[in-house]
Amino acid sequence: MAAAVAAAPGTLGSLHAGGARLVAACSARLCPGLRLPRSLAGRRVSPATWAQGWVPAAGGPAPKRGYSSEMKTEDELRVRHLEEENRGIVVLGINRAYGKNALSKNLIKMLSKAVDALKSDKKVRTIIIRSEVPGIFCAGADLKERAKMSSSEVGPFVSKIRAVINDIANLPVPTIAAIDGLALGGGLELALACDIRVAASSAKMGLVETKLAIIPGGGGTQRLPRAIGMSLAKELIFSARVLDGQEAKAVGLISHVLEQNQEGDAAYRKALDLAREFLPQGPVAMRVAKLAINQGMEVDLVTGLAIEEACYAQTIPTKDRLEGLLAFKEKRPPRYKGE
Image (cartoon, rainbow, N blue to C red):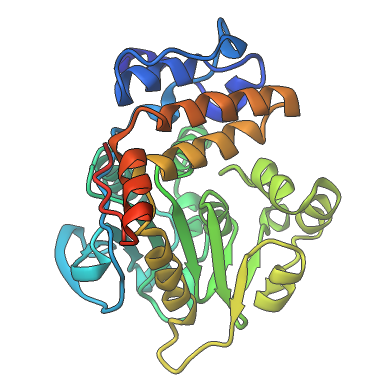
């Protein structure tokens, strides 16, 4: 299966041509012997989204804010696995203050390494991407570094940025972008790859590449229209307009907008609250729900409903489903294990 995944081009786009062979591969992985509904027989769906393993539940309530193990890839990216009641939440903190968190070769390399580790980490339930630099989420590409590249170097590097952002979009667990400051160009594209975006009202967001006589190259021309509609996305890209948090909320670019606090981390705190809401839910169900939504949005309704049918079938033989029913009967919180 790994070889098939490596060969698969963009996971969501490939589904548009057919149906859901992906679900068959995933069925075998999650619960061997599970058969697909006849409505999906012979259809093709990219398996890449399912190539990341399964996650155990963290379960239970979730107050307290504790940090524990920090995976030190280098200071420009800090990966923190939260503990105690927040166990299962991972925070990726961009910390490149001297470069306004711009996407340099080194930062992209570290992001790629971190994402590769997280997608196969069976303890991960939700990932938050934030900045540890006050007032900045990510200023986009490192233009000083870019200016030193030859024309032959630019294309491959932008392709690498696009690949890393795609990997973030294809993570199997919920992802939240906490935008507490400037998110321009590639910085906004990074946020667009996340499932949910929250921002402070003082944050600034925009795809400004046309000012530099180029276009968004990290998925912005594709994800922004899917988020806010084609006409408005064209208007924002053509004008290189920058929106504040309130304006971004009004057009549907973000889900929540908050007044910034004295610590400068209002969006992060909201993202943490959302992640805590996700923790008690069944981990298999969370992954399958994300797959059904992501894949279904790329196809017609009939095919999308067939994908939902196949994804629902993934949950039927699980121990977690039986545990959920038993917990309901016994009037207690469920203890999910991701099985």
